[in-house]
Length: 208
Length: 256
Picture (cartoon, rainbow over the protein chains, first blue to last red):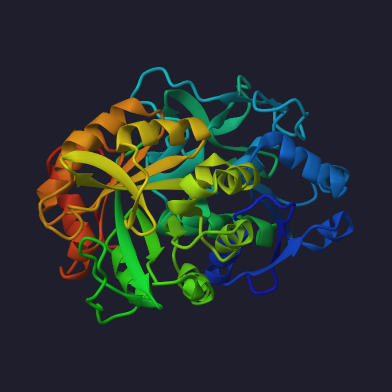
């Protein structure tokens, strides 16, 4: 994987250093990318993100990254993490902006159905019905670290997805045509998280 | 269901790990923060809180460097705090690799800055630290490293902070700090039931059962500092104890 290079999409959405640290630790080349013209140079892209949905969409638009990402869609694997997963969807209850719409899903507020369900959903939680190759070598029902107040819900029967429970069932990871999304933070989910990122890098390497 | 969390708090002064007793930080523990974090994460701790208790703000830069250094190999969430008195410094702790920041004095003295941090980083990044002590038998919130009373009881303060839009509460009873008597369960329980956000209990843990008592009182996460430094496999043993007591917590195991 020495020649593989991952682009971390930099759109001022916080927490990017943790992703860099994880990729450095795995030992894969990685660079921040905020110029849409440079997106073509990478074998795979990670869209990180923490923050608000509309801010993320405005910021992507301002940098020309919405058009840039749409232009490279289908040419290389993409992994959206947390808010980065949500922007791959059609829309979010958190804001009024449209998402990228690559995935047939909507982002909804987590319902605090009783006083034990706190929002944000913060902490380690099980991921069920995991799929390969992203979760290869990771036991089903393993714990990953989540921090979010909105979650992805999809009615699309065709969409390959994992589920987790907090207040209700939500989509904790999905894949469609090498577009991956994870609601949790693999960069902060210890060995399982690092394995997941390594699996994604292997996919990128294999598609070169 | 989201799991309860075990958090190791690491208190540093001038870059060195220290022991805390009622906010006096005298005893230097003879290893550096990176080794502490390395051990705790191997022993399946769920999260780390790193607190700068330097005597003045001149330690800010050094703390930031320490943070950058330790987070390069820390793959569990880490919260950093202490001396966050300017917006830029708060933001710089995040860009130095911290996932969340811990704010105490500024919640009272500079709520405008806290609001800006919430807007820039999102509420999930902001952990509100509440220190309180008993003055004439009444619990009163104190700021400035516990030195200045603000005349508000911790339950009302927690409610105000919840409304202000912080993401979590880190609760510490100064009278319990380093006193080995366990958490102040009454106030902890009251706050856990009053607020809509997660609550982290801290201060006074000397036996694993103190952690269990915190969770039974309603805490989402339980934290300790001193005790973890002196026990081999400490955080793994603590989690094993909690798991066997029926707590929904991430599997304790050795993680390389």
